[in-house]
Amino acid sequence: MNIELVSNSAEDTLEIARLLGKTLVPGDVIALTGDLGAGKTCFCKGVGEALGISPDRITSPTFTIATEHKGRLDLNHIDVYRLDSAREAVEIGIDETLSETKGVCVVEWAEKVEQLLPSESIRVTFFLAGDDSRKITISGPQQERFAAFRKWCERFSSGG
Image 1 (cartoon, rainbow, N blue to C red):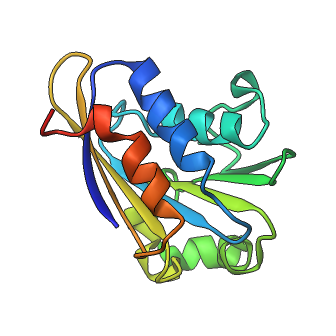
Image 2 (image 1 turned 60 degrees about the vertical axis):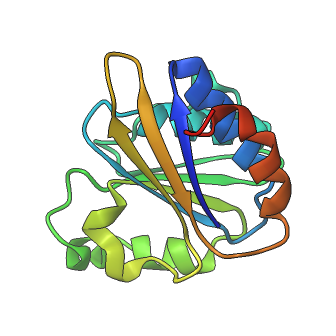
Image 3 (image 1 turned 180 degrees about the vertical axis):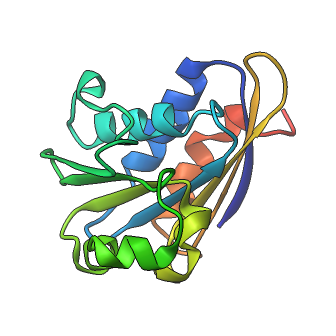
């Protein structure tokens, strides 16, 4: 899967994330990368909402590093912004959370722990494209379950 989308608002970003969230299965890891303020936590709120978790409960866990939310599938929200290395992430058990989750993991600043991410991770990259606009690139395994997601997101495609 390799999809390029355009979000013109926080609501667009939430909707794209909700649509992706509908396709998720236990063990999925979503790796989020992008500049500060690009929409990573907003995206996590949308994924959480698709999993039956109130978006109000999801805040950036920058200081706590990881939070778990109960839903249709549990959501492990991990923010490694404050970590200096993947080794530090291993020391606090992030590698175990990524490999043993029975729910879904969303990792903000995933580039900092790239070597710990499963090869089948869904990668979401945010590029600032204006005041409220974001270019969002989503890539990951070529699996049939993402065909519906691709169709649902046609209205956000960078071509139209």
